[in-house]
Each structure stands twice: as structure tokens, then as C-alpha cells.
Length: 416
Ligand code: NAD
Ligand code: MG
Image (cartoon, rainbow, N blue to C red; front, side):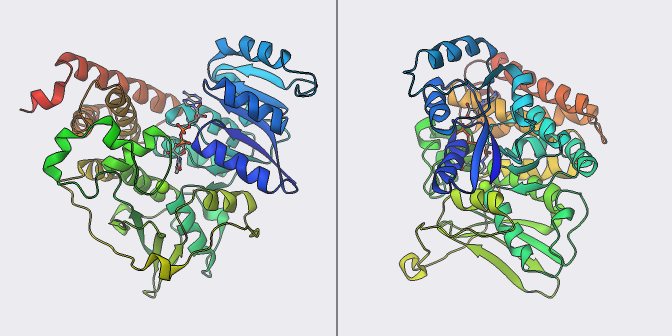
């Protein structure tokens, strides 16, 4: 029985993780849950999974949660009530909860950084969905992993595919995962991308893209932020940096290819020129289950892949002019140090403003580029945690100021 702490339990990753727990009640149990603001769903989860601890990002909601749990019918009310915690300290305590074996990081954005570090410092293994944490703070997270011996198992479908392919090589060694040391025998990684909501749009039409357009993903059902990142291909750019830190591979050896069917979840090329790929229907439960069961494989009744039903697998190069975020991410990754933290925070803030309809879709890359340009003079090559946090806060503020400084649709106007 593996005990799980599920961070961000009310989100897309969190709810799918809990579905897996439902599917394998003899293998997995939940000891800790954390959530943002969705109390209704969280209370359902508490009733069903009876965790030992529950933490809310917003500490002010803890009293309401306690009242609502106490008001449940006695047969529905967990007895004793779970320990209820709030704020960042509460999230960190749930992440480091003593009885947890594995922490699933389903918080969105850099808000996941401190809880992730708390889990690592407590020596927990992690199923890493919250990629922003590794991207913003790779130079801080990697040495912490080396110190604690925690293993970072990739839940992102592409990195899970790469991880699964590497199990089939003579160099399979998870101790090497996220050490920053190059995986031997690995020549190249090819990350596949669905192309997101705009894959069939002309680049010229993207200036008209609305929030509704950007949040309807053709292949995957995910949270709103990552769905917008998929539309801009920033998600793939972030995944390039994620792959660099997880597999110790140079940016020149990581490629992005558009694969509209999302059946091949990524590929590795080995030094003998052999290429290995991992295939399946697009379903996040597969990579999540592999994190939970690794190194074992558990039998599932899930839909089996039928390639004759798929018919065709196609591939094409992404157009850099259509997807400027992709190049911004490569450039930030190559600059290293605090630059990925600045780029990631600028993206998080710009996407939030886009979702609030304060800026246009194409303002997102323009704002990120301006913030990264400004950060160049302050870049810290070998940052401490405080440098990453300061860079993150600065970049968000810089985006807000740039956006506010030039009206509701600022950068588009400024750029003519
Ligand atoms: P989501 O928006 O559906 O869920 C986010 C969760 O985090 C919710 O439980 C929410 O309450 C919580 N949360 C939000 N803001 C918070 C804050 N400031 N502090 C603490 N908790 C907060 O997001 P998602 O799609 O599940 O994505 C979660 C992470 O997993 C992201 O980093 C994303 O990039 C990654 N990921 C998701 C998918 C997917 O299929 N959804 C695939 C690959 C990677
Ligand atoms: Mg992915």
C-alpha cells in the first residue's frame, strides 16, 4: 500500500490521481490533500478518501471548511476530522506529511515551489506534474534532490514517455534522474506537441484569438493555464526546460515536433541511432499511474490502443513565427540561472491577464520577451532560493506594470 499526498487535489491532475486511487484501492491510499478554493469538491474528496491532513492555500477558508465538515451527517463525517491547515506553511506540512510515501504535485504554477521543496527536504518521492517549479528553480531543486535522495518521477506525459523509453536501455537508472548529469547513451529527445488550440489556424489570425478559442484543447482536457500554454506552445517550451533538468540533456539535443494525433507521447534517439517511442491514447491517467506504480506495471481495463483505428500518425515542424513562445523558452533555458524563473513568472502573469481579458493572446509573448530582456542585467547564474523567489515576484510585477502602463491592450498597441 502506497500512501499519497495529493497537492492540488481539486484540479485536473489531482482529480485524475484520485480516480486512480479509486481504481486501485488495495494499492494506494490518500493521507494528505491540498486545494485552492473549491471547498465543495474538496469536501467530497475528504468524505471519500479520509485523509489525515488537509491544507488550503487560502488560510482564511480553514474555519469555513471545519464548520462545513462538522455540519455533515454523522455517517458522512470523518471521525476524527483530518488535521486542517492553511496557507503556504500548511501546504508545506501536507507535502512533508510523515506517513506519505509519494507526493503528487498537481498545484499549478510557481505556487508549487515551496511545497515541492518541503516534500524533497522530507525525503519523499515525487510524481512531478507541476513543471513550473522545476523550470523556475532547477538550480535550487536539483541539489536538494541530491542531498535528500528523493526521486522525481515525471508525470508530464512527454517526460513519462522518455522515462519509460529509457527503462528499455542498458543505462536505465533513476538515481540519475534530475541530477543534472547527462543520461548516457541518449543522443536526442523529440518532444511531441499536439499543436494546441490553434494548430490549424493561420499565424495571421492569432491576433483575433479569444479566451474561448485558446481554452478549447483538441486532444487533452486540462486546467485553463496549461491549456493556454498549449495554444501558445509555451507548454512545449516549458517542457524543453523540464527535459533539460530531468535528463541532463543539452538544449541542442531537444527538439519539438507537432504530432496532431497525440498518440506518440515523445521519443528518444540513442547513440546507435535507434529511436524509441512510447504510445497510447492521450490520457493523463497513464503517466500518473506509472509514477504511482513504478517500477511495476499495474493491469488496467483502460481503452487499449488500436493503431488501425488511428489510421495515420503525422508529424511536422512547428512554425517559429507562429509560436514565438517556443523560442523564448529555449532562449531562457540556454541563458540559465534565474532567466527561466523570470520567463515562467512572466508567462504565468501574462496568461492570467489574458484569461481576465486584459490583454490579447499575442501580447503574451511580447510581454514575456520584454521582461526577459530587462532581466538580463540582473540574471543570477547560480541562484539561491531567495533569488528565484525575488525574480518570480519581480517578473510578475513587471508584466503588470507593462500591461497597465499602456492601456487595456498595451503591448499590441505599443508594437503598432
Ligand atoms: P488545475 O488548474 O486544473 O488545478 C490546479 C490545482 O492547484 C487546483 O487544485 C487548485 O485549487 C490548486 N491551486 C491553484 N492555485 C493555487 C495556489 N496559488 N496555491 C495552492 N494551490 C493552488 O491545473 P492542472 O491542469 O491540474 O495542472 C496542474 C499542474 O500539472 C500544472 O503545473 C500543469 O502544468 C501540470 N500538468 C497538467 C496536465 C493536465 O493534464 N492537466 C498535464 C501535464 C502537466
Ligand atoms: Mg505535457
